[in-house]
Length: 130
Image 1 (cartoon, rainbow, N blue to C red):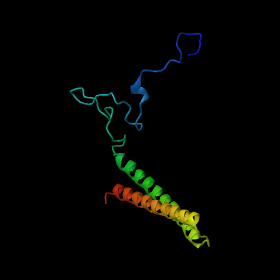
Image 2 (image 1 turned 180 degrees about the horizontal axis):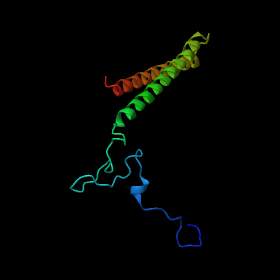
Image 3 (image 1 turned 180 degrees about the vertical axis):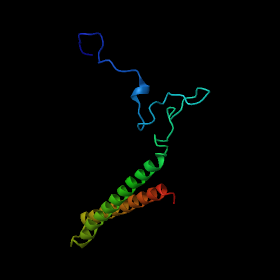
Image 4 (image 1 turned 90 degrees about the horizontal axis):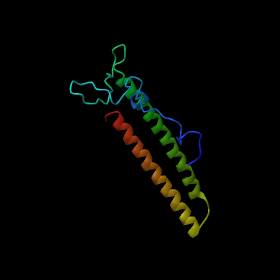
């Protein structure tokens, strides 16, 4: 602990967690109650509808799907980039234990890359409900 002119070892902080926690701009508090029984609502007493009455969930889902789709495309490109060194490594005129280990590890990298690509494609199909 360090010496400060006050008795507090740190700067004061706000205890108003309802004002500090923001989910997406419309849902402002996890402690607000929206039912007659006083049960805390995870939506903070706000509906998911915007001020114009349209549901914002569809736009959020579409944006999330587009983001996942972009990441899957990047994963596919990275996976294909891993296959090029593998084919070049096979073309090297090199023999012995070191060459075998080198080629085994390149092959394992290619297998792992294909597995990651397959898993990313599975996530994308789950996002689209297939």
